[in-house]
Image 1 (cartoon, rainbow, N blue to C red):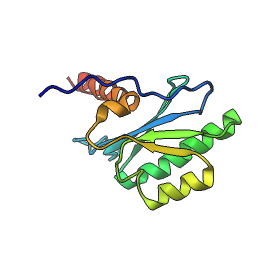
Image 2 (cartoon, rainbow, N blue to C red):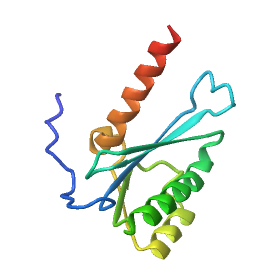
Image 3 (cartoon, helix red, strand yellow):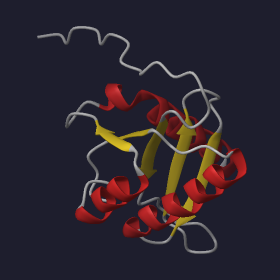
Image 4 (tube, rainbow, N blue to C red):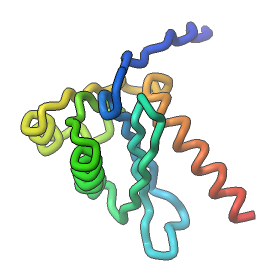
Length: 137
């Protein structure tokens, strides 16, 4: 049985930081020279600007997200309105829920086993991994 095509699901955004897409990739084998086995992609939907942060452990992703978003909000003078991620444990826990409540942004998660619905961050991850593998050849 074939799957039906997915309709466009992206939220309409008008300004920078209206919607950020997040995805964590890893564990990467072999890890980087400095021992980082994961990387986090944070992508602004309006500008398609991407931040990449590396971490040694999966649960460091939330700390890296906080660091980047504080920088973004400070430099742009705007607050984040919405983030979109998959249901990975790094962003679907009580600590991230508390952060969303305190910061005032909405956290939307895609349904399980549907990477098509986290497309912006997922495509970016594939591009980065393909370029890395080409460099290894």
